[in-house]
Image 1 (cartoon, rainbow, N blue to C red):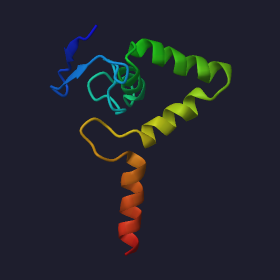
Image 2 (cartoon, helix red, strand yellow):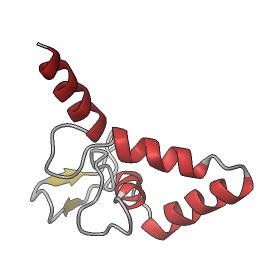
Image 3 (tube, one colour):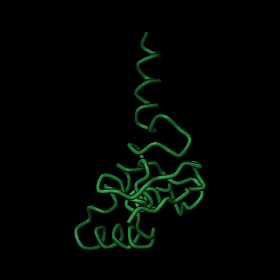
Length: 101
């Protein structure tokens, strides 16, 4: 069964097949559905699930083993914002390397 779905943020359409999912978005931090930095909403959109599920996952990982907070912080630094070509970490590295020249 092939269906076409329009996504308002990009205006593009994706066709279901074995190689593409309707929820398959590039991994970007959300600017519209963010609670703190948009990491959970961006991951959820990329996976095609509700952001609440990812947020609860981060909370559970934080409470049960302490790994949720470092994962969230890594996502904040390494996942680019919507509309941005670079992550915060790559922008920082670029600014440090350009200041040395």
